[in-house]
Length: 433
Ligand SMILES: [Zn+2]
Image 1 (tube, rainbow, N blue to C red):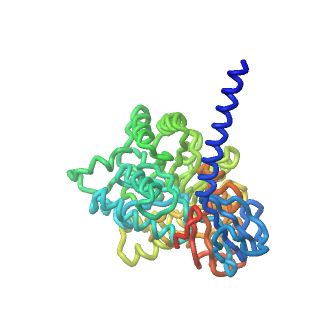
Image 2 (cartoon, rainbow, N blue to C red; image 1 turned 180 degrees about the horizontal axis):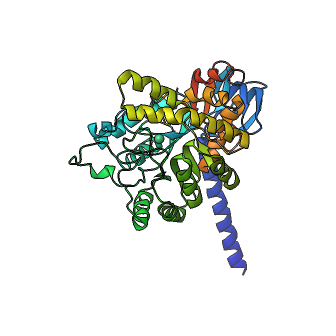
Image 3 (tube, helix red, strand yellow; image 1 turned 90 degrees about the vertical axis):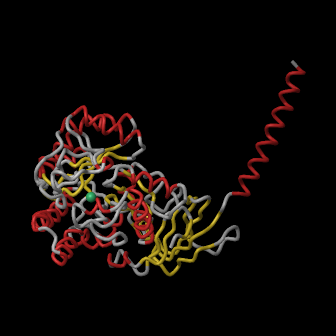
């Protein structure tokens, strides 16, 4: 007994020594730095704090307090002349591939080219202050997964990405390559998400989930830019979407639905989506369903103006221009109504339709259509983080969150346009612009 006890004491002393040794090593490796924020937008409380000191350790914020002097145990980034916000988040981007003006454009580049173009788009997006995006579909399946992983591995700079892998769509639907001659072959990686029936929905959902997507993206109605499809008309059936969502749940993943028309949106909501994209023609019943079930609205209320201007200049098809006219103003009124009703709203712009890096252009529109500047900023930070289920890690400048921040010139609360004046961007405690 005594012998055993002596042995176990020695062992425990040895373990303690080892533990202290590793603690010392990890303590020495912990990287501490500070940011001084002239004004800090606290999106959790909805207030602006003056002259704050943010302590960062190993990429995460460990404390936020009033500035009383420069600490000695780490470098200080002096943003005392700027307004500091949490890293911005865009919940509807298409980073991979070039800007699309015609439906045949995706056929002019390879998947490899698309990803490299995507790397440039990712950098532009990050430098515009957007440190996280939800990328809701690429024409060539899984190219977005490749870009996400390259960013996470540090090969290329870019925002944190949640990706969908491709579009789940009916044959000839809003997420298919349409408008080409019947005898033109479409590459296999552009048809991975085409769903013919309920069993097919399960199979295609599994394909994406097994390739490590973060979300499923349904095309529940026709689309503005996809020729021959009607934004008001439902496409995927409720049963198909429900089957795919059952698969997503097994992997702990969510689904979102592109839906302009009210009927297609309601089918997607009943099937169990977490968010509705666009929502241009939603009626009161659809909005009430979203409100009562906690379904998020991600409405791209800026880019209709962009399409209208560039489409007219570049001679886009009249069908596209008409569909854009039919959905732009209605979408803004739906947005205004959703704000009034208290529907959950996250910030999403459909970048890739308009040039990447201009993601902040939508903020003034959201203020014009019913949000306060603080609400608009919250939609692009804490609300977007909650939509992703990542709110413990990102979306606010407070302890525990990654040190993702933007410093802007001016005062975005007094004048929302100032949010476009990005002075510097930090991701995980590293200055990236
Ligand atoms: Zn889109």
